[in-house]
Image (cartoon, rainbow, N blue to C red; front, side):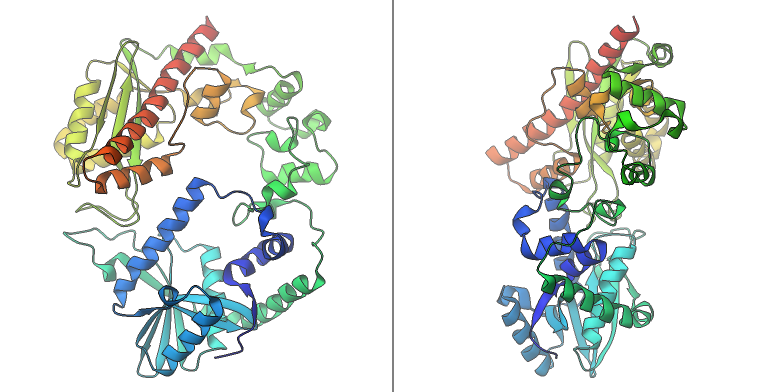
Length: 487
């Protein structure tokens, strides 16, 4: 194994590839980072959970991360374990040319080391591949007997039986061929990254598309604090970032400065005028056409979806979307159904959905994509109910079409068309507290499923129903607002 000195972690190197300024700030001014959102925290935790589960591919290993949190101690322990020919090491720690990597699984057999990098995803992204190639580069130069590294992802075709079979749940891809072609690239880039740190001055890099690709930069608040204002060109929806940056780099910072001839789509031109006048752009006749499809009696419907990386129910796949809660609100009543138990309740869910929506001729939804996918899955699960479920779907009137098609645009939307944002602009009176996103709702539901009856379970139940019912009520009040508007 190579020298112990290091200044660059795998994550910081990937930041360097995206933006040298972000990399420098990450290493020297971490206090400037944006606050990590709850959704990102949950995504990171999911990755950790999948990595831990994947250890079952090679059980019985020694987990370096559980022995020490100190990088240098982890490096030394890894060296000792390798010298002792330990068959399986989790979080094996290596350092080469200032770069530290921690390998999810390192397997030793017959003098050969094979590494496995685990990702909680079905698809292999370009970023995942570069991440794995960097690890390959460090291992090739650090570990005698190293043969290959496999990028290991979830198998989207795997269907759970009674229990999860780890060997079928994951699929692996060798990165050796790709990594060998890029060894010189990593040598050069690491040298460049070290030089950035030795300069001891924040690189002078302006904002650009790199702020968003491959991930949204977590120093956005620092670099963009003087860019974003009420009339910033970046508030315009439906216009690609390439065009927005073309304007910005040419000195067109605010919407008022955009030449009308630069906007090809007449609807987008209306949005520009809406910003300048600070008044909404409305096509009442188009809104009326949609509203005329509503037939009494009417209720608003919202569903919550559970999409676990690890299948939890027999016959399901990784990340399969499973509905676990629906809420219905009409003018006078509210109702809901929440799957309560560890057992598979999709059939009961379908039956309750059919039963509780039977008396309505119209079901108002906001972006019907999720609800339609849920019904499709329920039809596959319970073919005998297909006709009734199709009848439920045919009752949908999607109010999101008003905003997707720009029948209504308010400058306070900026480029956010979420139900929560629109509800706030329309002042519907619906207040969102507690759970703030679908990912949070999924997390609460997983906690709910695992917990025993008691205060904690009841609290999770109440929060889930409140979050879902808020969306149903907001959708209903949104319909009222639009109906009053076209009158």
